[in-house]
Image (tube, rainbow, N blue to C red; front, side, top):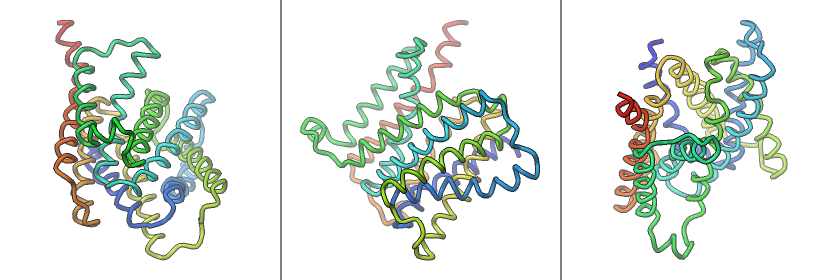
Length: 288
């Protein structure tokens, strides 16, 4: 498939994730488990028949650890979705690129450039407007906000851990082991929490199928396919449109509405994140 067409399809698919979580009405952790597990079940026979199970020890460890982190990301994001609007939760979860830049600077001592720091502060300013500075000062804000922030941090860790692995193994092999680890992790968490995993209505099961087949399997197969051909920076910028699409879907399907401060704050946050992606262009201009 053409990489650009693949990216568009992937973005449309993952944009439905918060909608399915809201409509399912199940425990958020159960929704997260079935999202990953159903996608993994679909890959299982294909990988066995086509022989996609072979993988090096190092790549296996990266895929498995990344799967656990991805499972944690989905878990806390789903928890945030039942506390705050789908639009705001999706927006905050997309702060991952800012965390990646901070981790690279603090741990790996990689300089991020002036534009990255400008974008980071713009995004933080947007977050303050979105949440409300009075609520921040008094620490009185919806628990969904820090949960969505934690989800963005987990996804940043996932990006750091799995960066470059798709150039070493096939997308399907990586996703098989990645989702296997994520499924086991979320299954254990659900058992520990004594969450219901069987007795659901037919509409809830349909939402689970939608998460697994559309959002996880189709969405991430197409996005990971794109990452093999296009620069990760460009893909990451394009993924920001997920927030806008999810917002429109939430308005149409969930009858959600946003306050003026949430709209203004969201636009500023998106602008800040977009600015952080310009750091590569800044370095190239400086070098020339």
